[in-house]
Image 1: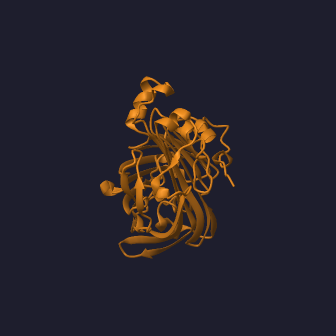
Image 2 (image 1 turned 180 degrees about the horizontal axis):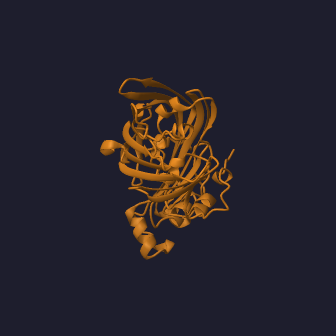
Image 3 (image 1 turned 120 degrees about the horizontal axis):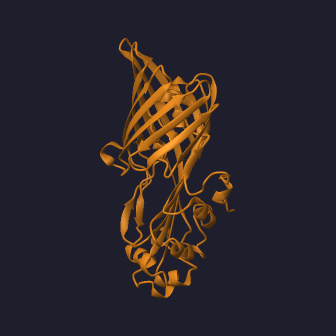
Length: 362
């Protein structure tokens, strides 16, 4: 059964050329920064498992749905791409979609999570879908300078690659360890993962016809590959004794790397080792002032092992009970702005930063 991506997103009231986040973590409006933010631990625990140790009572964790696009507008991509048991488009129409988006690399990224936390232990489900339309250099040059299907160059080629990872479920637990020097919180997240992968490509003849595409050889004649694995994230948060103004954090994403790897082909048909979930290290710091101002700084993917290395900085200002304004900057994706009203969060950006626990590498 087809599950249209458009059915997940009821976003008609917002500009569809931008990226949006609603109902999720406040960090989305702060340039993605927040690994060391204790102000809303139930919302932040998805990024840093240690923060779950600060949740008391029963809480609904962030049921965020985020959308990110590159190279095309959201409304255009939603009209052409859909999810069907691991596939991102009907193979009989894929070549036409690839030709339509031949000018540049195009990406549609969807993430979502929802769960419940009770006294430092949480269970949640969620996932990420990353679909990319990848024309090679020759086809991009044709699309920008000519555009006549009869003149597509002989080596023109495009690929449609999509990866979906679902957590069924995530189980997270954390503890606080006080000492004379301060308090250390430690958290662990165990993730039962299921991955779906698909890859179609189209050569010159198929692009000219604008209809069917070819399954990539790694699919071995199937529409998609499906794999299961287990991953573990760990997080730490430090608060010095006698001073709750600032906090420091360390998160190791995929501390136990999920055993998902296989040989795949790129947009040109060349073989490479596909490993979408790699171990990465992230550092965070936050300052929470008496004026209601919160400042957060994160260093993402230290060493750039997953190709996502960046700096994120964000600011939040509270205005009374239940109202907060936010802004931030991520060195890879630019500025974001956000608003919190009564615990409901909205963020807006040309390109939202990817949530730390939802990073794919390909």
